[in-house]
Length: 450
Image (cartoon, rainbow, N blue to C red; front, side, top):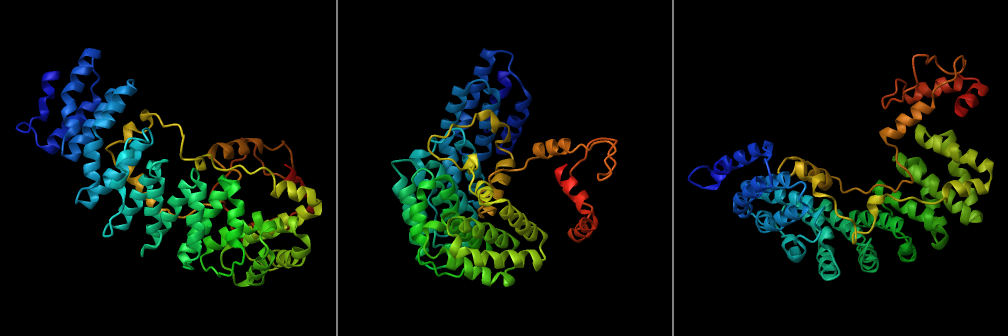
């Protein structure tokens, strides 16, 4: 077998031929440890190949053969570091992008692998946006106590890039670093608000919202930045982030009721259902801490959303809050101000446990890292923090819990099994509303209880 592995000689196979041979060898399993190390010795020079396809195929074969030898895998990653860095600086944009995506994969298990070479991931002026955004994501993984000042200074320069997606990615990267270096990042983010540029202000507000969710100690600095706020944002995601901040920290922002009142006065012209829902929640939260200033405008908002709003989700949210208020202030406080649970993925960057190499080894040198990189680069929007998340498992468990009692006149006949939930309901919102209103009041209550 070992004699058949001398494919690395240029006079036997070209680059693609060597890559194909290495791909075929993925299916071979050595008969013993001696044969394994003989194979690895023959493969070792190919890890330093100046041909990126050969190097990548060899590294994947190394990781496959040494799945039970983590020390050997780490050594192989270190050996391939030079060729990977060379590929990341290639003149070919496609090769650069592929190399950056694979480097991100490696950093999940060995965060310090490229630490000394962080400057190689600074962006060039003429580089396309998708490469700049990938480089910034790598820089976030490489930040440490020694280079944080230089990395943040570099990222701050990208925040004013002419490409809005690149600018938003840079702001998001600063926010990610802020989970570990809060004070430095807050100073940069609050300073960017002074530029008064729509897309920068919107991205900063979303980043601040995510940052205070993870680091509540940042609240004072955020409240100071919101004092005297006068900007009228057009971006719905930016407005939603501002409303969330005003709802959570409105008791510390002097002008919070006036900012919310301006939004409530213009709610009829608001087209985003997400902004309306956030406005409802923010107003009710502010009512708990500043009832005298908020009571009148909260009533006007609830009346509009219940009687005039055409969006079912917004109206149902308003009805929920209206009925919750009837239960008492303490119940409202318990629901809206109960313990917040953040996304575990939003934890500090420093000190995270590395992933086992086995979790991603099978996807190395495939298209999977590229598709993951494309989805990450293409989605620079921020998601509003949620206290909980529905998963297929929870949907299944909910469906099992909804098994009806035999003979119940108010529930459909499900003698064949448990009720199942569908992501594509057969009824439109309007049809569902008409059917719901036709039910007797007692039936409605009993269905809700079930």
